[in-house]
Length: 474
Image 1 (cartoon, rainbow, N blue to C red):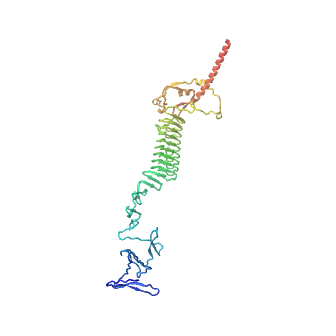
Image 2 (tube, rainbow, N blue to C red):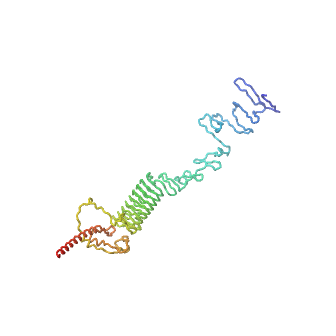
Image 3 (cartoon, helix red, strand yellow):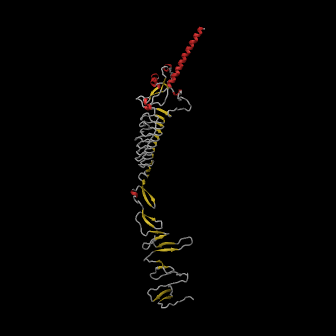
């Protein structure tokens, strides 16, 4: 059986099967009493209907593809003069089927248009159906729905375009506590700035609010701390660490100051090395080395004095303008004047490594000239008055001196009085810049050597006379 025909009662439509001449194709045509008659090809069971090299009649367009239930699965719409189309390709194992735009144009996109308020979904994500506004971004609600959203603070976040943008719960914003100044290359976090300071000199480092805040051309500076080196303008090669440290220096150079309010300084203060809480706080001069809690900032702060060395706690210069004074001590040790050194271990002793009570001195003949004998001895020594005495308390010191000039030593002492010694050996007494007289007993020692030699001569003479007398009596 090749072809099976089934009759339908009251049929008005039929199939017309026609052969064809050379160059034409046979045809199967629906005809009949109805104005529009389709052709239905129904396979048996799960079989398929196969149409090879399908060519439709005018308008030569399929309008739909139905599913197995006869419901429309894909609608097809013809476009006059179309040159671009959709190509659907299946795939072998391990590959994905492909939907692609093809056609005569070089660049062909694909438009997916939902119906009404429906959405386009790709991989479970629902995309918005209309474009957003300028500078908007796509956000998700966490349930697969995407939408356009405006970035919080866009343009001028929080009212200032210097605020640094950050993401907070899915939106971007700016915080007044986190700012960046692109002019000075300074990042600020809650008022603590990190950058190069004012002037944006590439070799400067500034960390802290207002650190190097007035700098113009000063270079190679490092400032760490609130208002540290805040007044610097053209000063260079300074290092300042601590609250307000070096804040009053404007043009000074090559200072190192570490400590809370250490070396606030003057405008041109330079070449100082300061370490400690408020150490050298009032210094406006140059070349000082002050190390320790409040060093140089005791009851008498150092101000205009230069080239001083203080090591200790709250040390005091002999005067605020003194220079070339060395102090090593604590508990408010006070210097002894210009060109002096004072070591004070809380009124204790100072020991040498060789346990000697005297200091070594340079005495090489090759370093000396105009060498002559000195014979001053017994005459001077016999005039020196050796005294017992006690040192006055600070409130007992004469009015022309300061209470800080008092010597902190108790008990009966043995020695000389400078004013009395000055009358005999003026070269052994010196008046310091404080007005206090000091004694250098080195020359007294050599006068004593001469005195001993002179006594030896006299003793030898007496011995000779006694020997002569004894010889005469014999």
